[in-house]
Image (cartoon, rainbow, N blue to C red):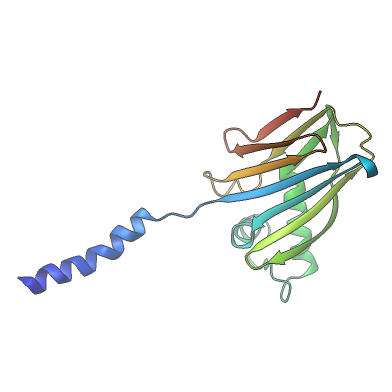
Length: 167
């Protein structure tokens, strides 16, 4: 009987553990307004494994996000996807994100963008739908820094837009 109980516990324990744990889906986007150079600087941090899955499903199963293995096509898919999912308006006008580059930090890809010629910041609106099409529980955290304030937003599939006013 003791053998039966031990065997039962050993069989059930992995199932209980796997049903309790689930993956946490999050990205962060830091936005900083630098009035001295009339620029908004943006860094989006996204887990490589998550964005790679989306790109493989959407564009090609051969997409690899790894600096030693990725192709120019892989980088273009990444830029294209983020451009479709990350939209910003400044002072109620849509603006274009200028892609600066990217770098990998272990399991995160840091993507760098800027918006030039912003002489005054009255309002900042963001739509960030990155990874919502693959992971419904995804949350995209936005950190906005200006010389006068620091503000944060959490965007999710049901609320992918955020607006900050600076008047």
